[in-house]
Length: 408
Ligand SMILES: *Cc1c(COP(=O)(O)O)cnc(C)c1O
Image (cartoon, rainbow, N blue to C red; front, side, top):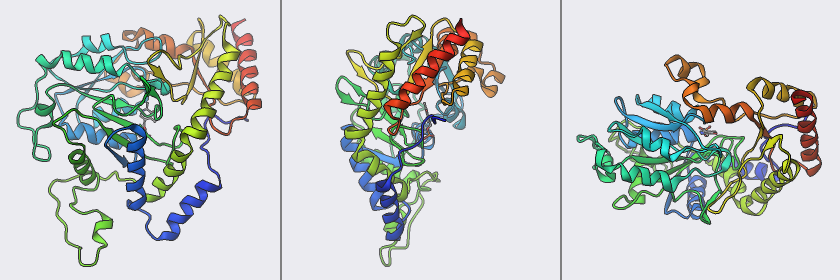
């Protein structure tokens, strides 16, 4: 069986983790701090904080911005549940919008969904292809006039909603670490960009995530970092490492924070991944996607994913193939036929309005026709470092045979 997305674990990874274990310091410490510095350099931003997942990191962003009951957050209907679940966690309402043909959020749909309750927009770089962040930031700026900040909000001595004076743009870049917009790496385009280092993602720390800060002045990246650092550790004025200094046991808690710090074990894996990301990971993923592209090009039965245009280049996280004119049932039958040929594929994603909870509270898939159309035709093919060209060819043969069987 060809697996779908195993992580790359080799002697270097094992060595790095072993060193941390032997060092005696396994939680947040010097390796996490070093990983953050290297991530910031990679993303070309001043500050990055590494935390335990995209989910908890991004939820902390919503809390920092003071989002809660009565507020609305705009998300695409086509995404992983985490994008909307964090909105529910803080008591706000996810407002879903439809997507374009490249699976990313439609900026015009965002414009139409904005109102005085809107506090945040979360575009998703699905499959690794960056969303149209610049246009979405423009939509947020154009809507300044009806932005109504919470007047009594106090976060770390200031009111972030008043300070920004518009809707916050938080990018869900769970798939797109290393993708590019206008030649620049993803991370500096949205106000805050959230990455995931979950086991199946392009760059992994087993579980993990990070936030890149690029809020406009007068926001200060060092102050933002300090707030997130403290609040990801119960609001404690000193972290575990600072408390190990002899005699430095006393600390304070100024606000009841959360608990979502990254460990040095995770950071050690991440640093090995990061070191070889541009030289090995991205080129291999790109080559695999290009091999798929060559096989499905000029074949009217398929729609290839957009991986690059004049502005944007994917991180080649997913190869989201679509079978032209397939119904949802036909797509499902194709996947069953592919599985029978010992190849694992996947579907990204079941649209939010089709999931039990969201359907149950009244979201309807018929309100998102593009989302449904793309989803019903979509099959994600395996893309990962250790996948060989011969295996890619096996996948291609399995897909071609399965489509022939089902669509005949
Ligand atoms: C994986 C993923 C997340 C969640 O990331 P975690 O690090 O597992 O919390 C969020 N959004 C999208 C689009 C994802 O694929």
